[in-house]
Image (cartoon, rainbow, N blue to C red; front, top):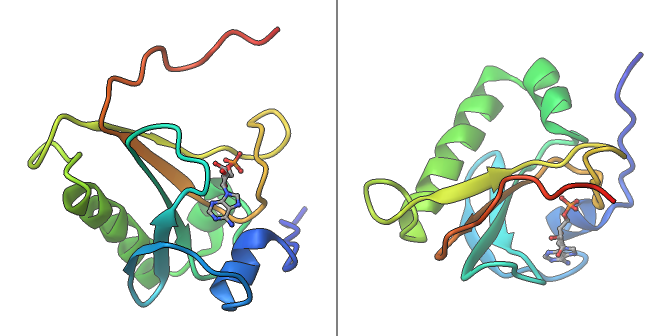
Length: 126
Ligand code: AMP
C-alpha cells in the first residue's frame, strides 16, 4: 500500500504561496513557520517542502538530502527560538499522524513547543 497525499491541504497551499505564513526559517527542502494557534510561548511547525503525509512516509521515501536538511532545520529552529539545550531549557517535539494520532493537516509537520514546562506527555483519552 502506498501513502496518499492530498495536495489541497493547507500546508501545501502555504508551500505554493497561496496563503500567507509567519516564516521562521526556510532552507532548500524545509519551511518552518509559527503555528496560527500557539499552545506555548514557542510553537513552530517545521515541514518538508516535499509531498509527504507523515513522518513514516517521509522517513521511508524522502531522499537523504531531504532528511538531512529537515533534521538540521529542526535543530536550527530550536536554537533560533532559544529552546535548544545549548540555548535554553528544552522543548517538546510532536508529530501527529493519521486518525489515532489526531492529525488535522495531512502534510508532515513537527510541532516545536517550548518556553514553559509542557506537563504530561499524553492526556488520557475520554
Ligand atoms: P495537527 O493536529 O498536528 O495536524 O496540527 C495542525 C496545526 O496546524 C495546528 O496546531 C493548527 O493550529 C496549525 N495550523 C492550521 N492552519 C494553519 C496556518 N494557516 N498557519 C499556521 N498554522 C496552522
